[in-house]
Image 1 (cartoon, rainbow, N blue to C red):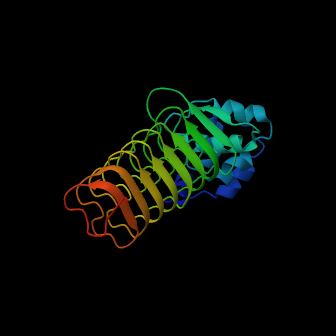
Image 2 (tube, rainbow, N blue to C red):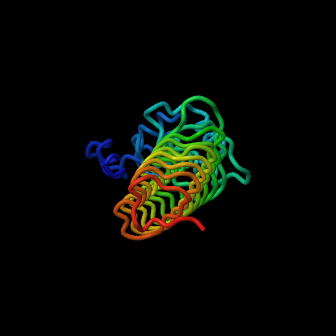
Image 3 (cartoon, rainbow, N blue to C red):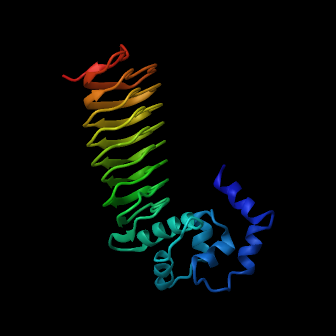
Amino acid sequence: MRLTRLVDDAYRGLNRGRRLKSQEGDPIFSLDDLAERVGCRPSRAEVEELLPPDPGTLERLLMSDPGRGYQIIWGHLSSIAAERSPEPLHLPARDYAGLGLSRGGIILEGEGESVDHVGERMSGGRIYLHQGAGDYLGQEMTGGGVITAGVGNYAFRRMSGGWGVIRGEGGNFLALGSSGGRVVCQGGCGERAGWLMSGGSLRIHGDAGDYLGLLMKGGRITIFGRAGRRAGWRMKGGTIRGREFGPEAADGVLGLD
């Protein structure tokens, strides 16, 4: 479901512009106040329109725990703050950090559970994760860069620009449907890495699971470890180069020199 539809559903048919205008004079003290006006899945423009100009309010909101209800609001706030900061911004590792980031830097710190959707739809800037990321890291990136200790599944899904460095394991479905950009995985990855790739490059220094480059249409995959079964199966374009392939590798898979 698209974000616009989710926001419309949250308003239950009310005129969003009228609602914003009627409450624009009310102070914003918490994430609850923002969510009351824009819903739990607003656009960045809606959040920025109501955000007071004083940096203290933004800092206070960022230090608030978004829980499970205000994650997207917090994600927009993290990007707004990073773009305004002359130095890289240190933030607790949370879901949707760096949502739509266009410039600046974010350093995510913390231990415990991995966080999902970090760097989603970012177009510029840098994000560094001391800990590993969860699922959907860098989803729909168009620019910028991400460095992380490791990832869950669907990292850099539908990426069209920018770059990513994974210092550990790459999870399943790495670079699924990517059309551009560069991804380097310094460890191994699970199955179906590069599935439906149409552009960009994916470099894997460890082993990859089954179906590497499945239905690949373009781009380049380089693997220095071992690829599992059916690497390059049903490829329609692009190249896969590697030192060692498992059984049933496609005929079009190339070996490294």
